[in-house]
Length: 86
Image (cartoon, rainbow, N blue to C red; front, side, top):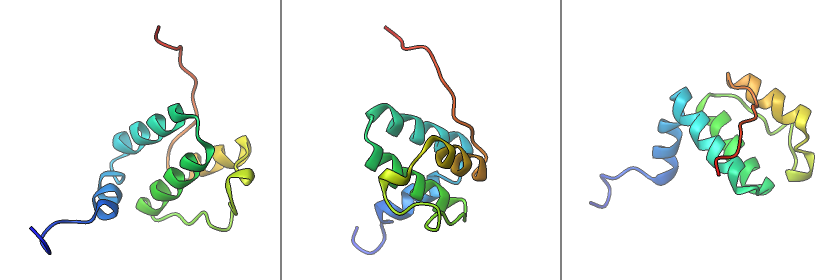
């Protein structure tokens, strides 16, 4: 199997080229409630779409609602709110 398998990063990048996969992935990361993890996920998603966000974000403290909305818009997504399933 060595040499013939894709790296996790390559597989993730490929899956994130699908808009539905990207939305589901980011939604799952948002549910974690970890801003650092969200920053990593946003960087992975934008990389998959060929959008560079390094100039927008230094670290997680820079991830404001306006910045996040702008990033999501640049990759064809919007931020939404849903009811918690109890």
